Amino acid sequence: MNQGKEQRRHVRLPHRANVKLIAKPPAKTAKLQTRDFSDSGLYLRCEMDILLEVGSLVEVQVLDIEDALVQWARVVRVEPGKGIAVEFLEASDPE
Image (cartoon, rainbow, N blue to C red; front, top):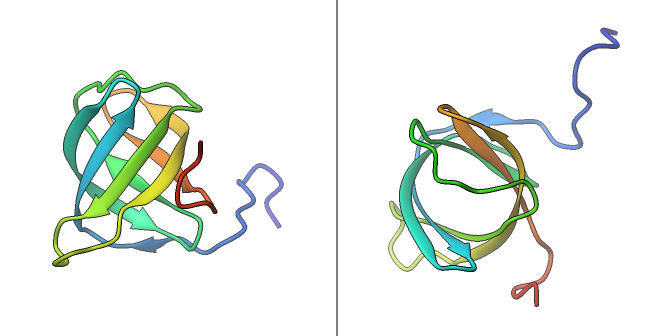
């Protein structure tokens, strides 16, 4: 086993979907595309910097599914000019 490789709880699956992301606070909205997903989160492609920091709370909703649920998530990684990784939160409202 490669010790330098990241250890993940869930397998990531490549998948492209259009997603609406709403950052809280302040409410900033962006339409992004997924690169991959797992049971615990998403990686969202974002070539522009949307000025989110690790730990920021966001809402994500898949736009390709009619009446898709909104899911709360927390930003866990920011790669400027590439994208962000978010981890789903257990509660429907983190506050």
